[in-house]
Length: 558
Image (cartoon, rainbow, N blue to C red):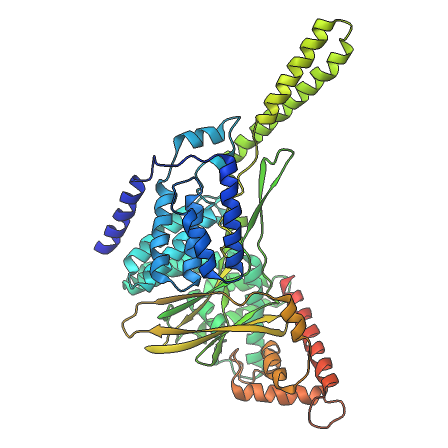
């Protein structure tokens, strides 16, 4: 706990040094900085982290109103480049800037009739500040410091209280899960269980995702019942949810999510009983390694309104039709998307005080424009009295000029290299070096993969590793549609027909199950019965699998 206090005291000291040292930049200069930053963001999207760092890092050196934004984005670059020490220091500096960098004159100007909101110090949205503390908590855990990690979690949960109503107050499930892990490491089990309960409650607030997992849990229960294997637990992802939740929470979750599925109360009750009984032997939070997958594109901001006074948040892009598979030492794991949904955080935050100021400024600008138009139009009618007509025209022109320099444009700066979601794979790995491979799919087509090494020590508290799946490359996707050799075929497509080929129902595919899948699908599409698939048969089979897979996933997404 002493270390935690020292670290956070250090942050406070840093913030105290930043309060009055903002370097003034004109709006034109700020716009040029953003153009430079956009180049770095493009390199980030291409996973060229070295070039992204080279462009973004110099923007972080000067204490401009944009410094906290560029520091946030540089933190993302370091995390995905595997530069853990640089990432940690930058996350600390970012937190210090967000907490302490303040310039009274720019704040006053931004709220005035003439000022532009983007001229004030960037502070980020609640979802951005929460995400910063989330990443900082992960970084402290990776360093073996659960005390400071817990302090970061608590700061993130405080940042998450900024909502319009209490409905979505403090509902960042991944933050809460990390907090529960910290309490478990500190052997404070009562507090651990309380935060686990809140974690699950936050998860079921995100209804679209919660419904997908509820339907899968009931499907697995029905299959186990049919096979008379109710002693067998669900696969790891569902198992993890059931271990975190109480029986009452699972019942609430399934009842709410499956209310339109015409399931009897008795069947639902039996499914809940099975979910808890079959997972009773598992320990919550029993992992020493956390794989964090940055999936999809983050929320975006844009302006609406006659003068751009309305700032709207547009959800980022992710498609569960384009999944990724994680292989650790050759064994496949599915990432869990339900706890770290940044878009859910972005769309459930409340209005800002600045929104009303901008609305008032837009109304003033509109009134001034209308008044000027009336005076200028009236000057023509008063032309018979030259002095009066000229006076009306000059007054109208003056008011029109005043209206032109009024600024009601909203600030749409945001942390552009966050993901749509942080998917997680919690693992308990033995000490040593482990191989990780991330395979990316486009619909049912294998797109590409990336590989790395993980090192886990015997005394590690919880190692955290950040990865991003390969980007979608449409040219590569089209090239992958050239079905030729039999080698790529069924082994790849078996993982998207898991319900048909997962013989033991554990949600994962062994090499034996993949081999059986190849045999099964060859039988299905071998039209001339020669024991192998020709190019045409291969193409027809893959197209059928693809169409079926997409159709099923679209139903789930609805």
